[in-house]
Image (cartoon, rainbow, N blue to C red; front, side, top):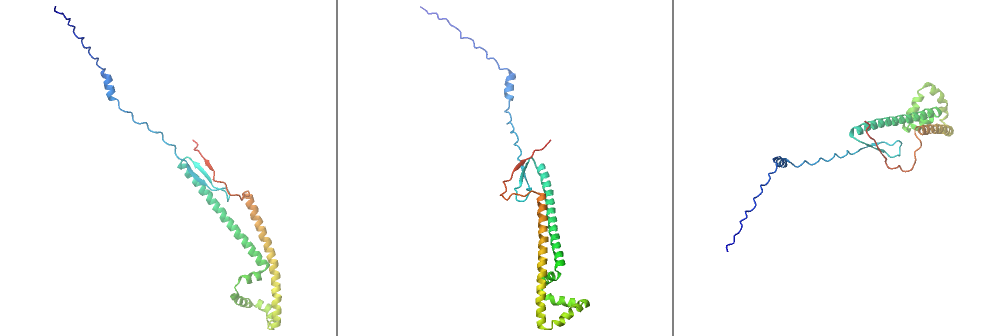
Length: 215
């Protein structure tokens, strides 16, 4: 018996749906996004050193935000240093004025001792001749010169003059010491008025002060 086989046709292939053209185009056109730029780093602070307020103290480190502020602070520091230099010069002038005061007082108290202590021995004879050339001086000293021709009289008179000079020197030294002490006390009082006494302990480490720009 002839088997009759039923011929079944394979199922028809389903047509593939085409992708939308707009999707393909968009996919092809996409490019990788550029890397995101990193946020700029904060600007480093600039440290400007300020001079200490009093001698022996540590300087002050001032942290400023930018170079413009640092330049302004440095300009102020230079002006302060010029003022300090002026004060030092004035103090030097004050010291010289005090020295002149002592010299003038010394000349008033002991002029002969002041001159003899400062004139070299090789100039003593020329100085005596200049004095004897004055007629008034010659008349005053000539009687003593005639008496000094005697060696005994001259030795005695030399000892008397040495004693007189030592007494005058002692009185002058005491007065000059008093004047110098007064000058020292005035200087200390002026310094205490300008600034309080500083500690003798080692100065602390520098402290940093941060400044910010005000808009």
